[in-house]
Length: 183
Image (cartoon, rainbow, N blue to C red; front, side, top):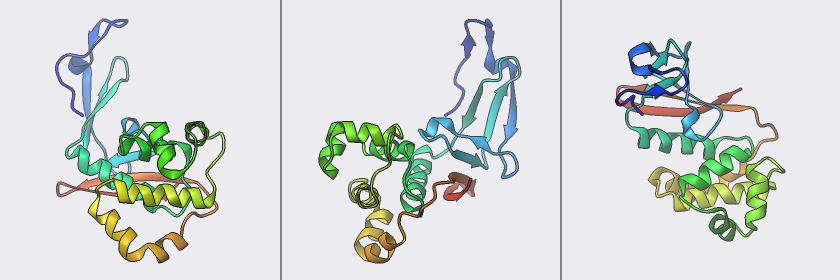
C-alpha cells in the first residue's frame, strides 16, 4: 500500500499527503498492519506515513503478496489454537465464502460464523483440519511440503492450550520473514 495522490478528509478539508511525516518501522517502533485482516500483525523494515493533522497512517509495503504468504505460514504454523480472526484470515486467503469453506471442512456456514466471531473456538480436530485444508488449497509449495512430508510431527504440536500470539514480519534485504511471537 502506498499513498497515491492527494488524500483529503472531507471533515478536516486537508490533504494528508501534504501533512504526512515519514517514519521508519523498526523492531522498537513497529507498524501495526491492520489491513492484513488480522488485529495482531506488526511490521518492521518499512516506511510509513503519519498525517500530522489527523493521525491517519499509510505505508509503503513492498512485495505485499509475499508478505501475506509469510503471515499465512506463521498463522498456520503457530502452536496456539486459531482465533476467530485467524480462521477468517485463512478463509479469505483461500477466497472462499463461509458456505464453501464450511462444506470443505464439514460444518455449516453458521458454525464458521461463530468461530470467526469468537462465539466459540473450533475443536482441536477442526482446528487441525482447517490448517491442513489451508495448506492443501493455498497453492503454497512450502505448506504443501509440510503437509505431505511432515504431517504427523507437525500436527502433534498443534494446537496449544493458550492463545496469546502476535505476528511480526520484517523486511530484510527485500525478503519478508514472519513469525508468531508471544503477545
